[in-house]
Image 1 (tube, rainbow, N blue to C red):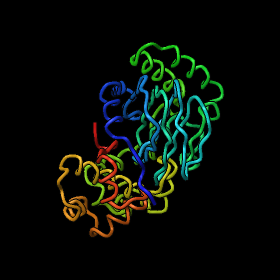
Image 2 (image 1 turned 45 degrees about the horizontal axis):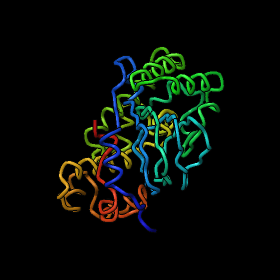
Image 3 (image 1 turned 120 degrees about the horizontal axis):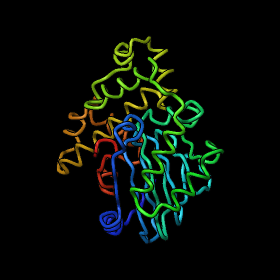
Image 4 (image 1 turned 90 degrees about the vertical axis):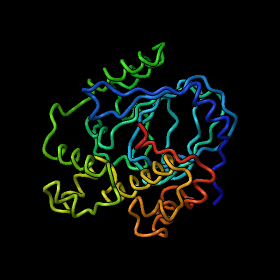
Length: 284
C-alpha cells in the first residue's frame, strides 16, 4: 500500500496562520475536549491520512468539503458527526478549507446522542440525521457567527440543550474513571485490571465501555498506546523505534509494528517518514 501523499510544507504553513483552538467551559470539560477551526485556507490537492485518536468529532464545513475514502461510511453534509473508529481513512483535500469542529471526550458523545456509541462505529453521519429538530438551527447559527468565540458560544448552548443525562450514573462514573486511569500509561493496563478497577466483571465492563466509547476496551487501549507512541516521538524525534516500543510498553518492536499497520496502514518507519508524529490525544 502506498503511503498517503501529504504536502506538509503547505499544510503546516496553513495551520500556523489560520488554525485556532480553545478549551470548553469548565462545565462541559467532561464532554468536550476542545474546539478548533481552520479558516479560509486554500490547499493544493492532496491526500491526507486520518488516524484514530480515541475521540469523536462534530464538524461544520463552511466552504469546500473533503472527499472521504476508506472503510469509514460517509455522507455528503454541511455538518457531520465522525464516530469512533479503530483504523485509518483518507481524505482527498483541495480548494478552500473553512471549518469549525468540536472534539469530544472519548465518552463525551454518549451524553447527548440518542443511540449507543457502538452503533456509530466507523460512521460519518449528518447531524440532521442524528438531531432532526436542532441540526439545521445549529448549522445556521454557526454559518452566521462571525468569530471563533461566537461559534463556540453557539455550540456550547446547543450541547447544553441536547444533553440527555443531567447527572452521571454509576456506569458513566466508572467509564470516566477508567479513562483517567488509562491516560498516563495505556500500555500498562490489561482488561481484567480495568474491569476490577470499575467494580464490574469483564463481560459487563466490556459491554458498558463499548456502549459509551464506541470501541471495545482492547481496541481503545491499542489506539491510545499508539497515540502515546506518537506523543513520545513528537517530544523526541530522534528516539529509536526499539526504545519507543519499550517506553510505550509494547511487548516488543514487532508488536508495535503490527499495531501501527492495523491503525495506520503503514509500518512505524513508513509512518514517521511520511507523517508528522503529532498526537491529537495527548497534545493539549
